[in-house]
Length: 214
Image 1: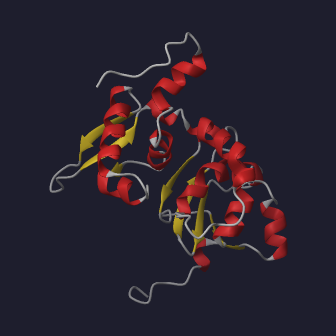
Image 2 (image 1 turned 45 degrees about the vertical axis):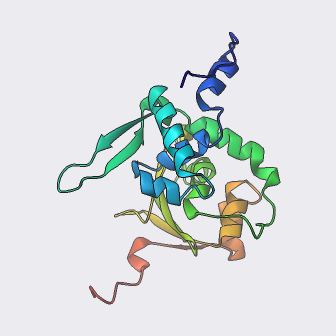
Image 3 (image 1 turned 60 degrees about the horizontal axis):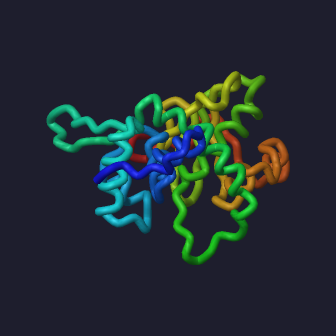
């Protein structure tokens, strides 16, 4: 299929030629957390059809936003991962998250939620909070799941995140999805949330040991 274009000599138009189609930026959001299999992407993009997802992945590969590679044996699956050009979308998505935050009120009954969807706006907030502390890796745990952030206090746009807890986090934050959304969108600071008891912060060594390994 030929590439659609606005045919305007404008940087905004050129950017939208590549990422303006429905689902493209949300696929980038998912892949900012690291390589993902097609089935993982489909599971965490509720509402996208298999045909649409396959089409968008091909478009993004064509536009040098992502690449596909086969996992080493004995695995047979392929994974998609962002190119440097694709990873450069992090500040774009962070700005969109800030712009869209006022529309994120009460969670609607039809709203899907994944814990890691809060990661992009949290990167800058937590990098700012921990700028003067020896904290670079933060586990965030919600009822809906867990993810971790790798912070760069000097340049929050270069941080990254991934699903699940980190092997060696510096600190662990536990909260509800509503609290996480409010924190991610500057309705209060982490210091204020900790003081109010809305967030529980602990050291990784304080986590209860797994009974199976204790």
